[in-house]
Length: 265
Image (cartoon, rainbow, N blue to C red; front, side, top):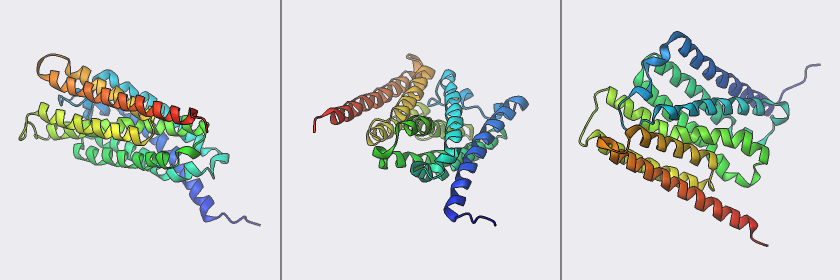
């Protein structure tokens, strides 16, 4: 006799399968790009826009990919099929990894404006999962904090800054340079706005370390790319200031959380 599979079980299996498939897809597309040399068709590290971090900062992708693989394996385990947190975030993360794969394909084929569309789809999907971390913070287990929350938070932090860098790169490549304000002025405006958004997100997430430290890493990379003298000095100063702001919010929020936990009943 055939066993009837419920709709809920089917959705859980679909969620688990899609995350594994799209995580592997982004790795395969990345490796194929290096093999064929098509990754060089669009490399934001080679752009001249001031909000692109220094080359060394892009090693964070190794951490993001490793975290994605760990997350994909963990959420695919049979005993995690009914996991409440994974059920809330699973389709968000699957779509984020699908959008990453599409971003890679667009970048490798020089479809610049499509990369802008996909980078914001990545960010929106990751924020969908990230909001669940905030809403259900008290119900998240220790294992989930390391195997689920941390890798997704790191990717969300990088996507926050990458969305700005990607967009500015495409705009400049499309001829939108020194429009109304000089490029450095636009970079300063974007860094201030990005820093404020990151600081607010860090505060609302009760000091999410993975998110905050990744944003700080990216902002310091921007500061290093612009140097401390010459035309980029102002951009470097603002990027550093934004990184300090996020760090201070992280420190104060974590201290407040620790004080609340340690306070006697």
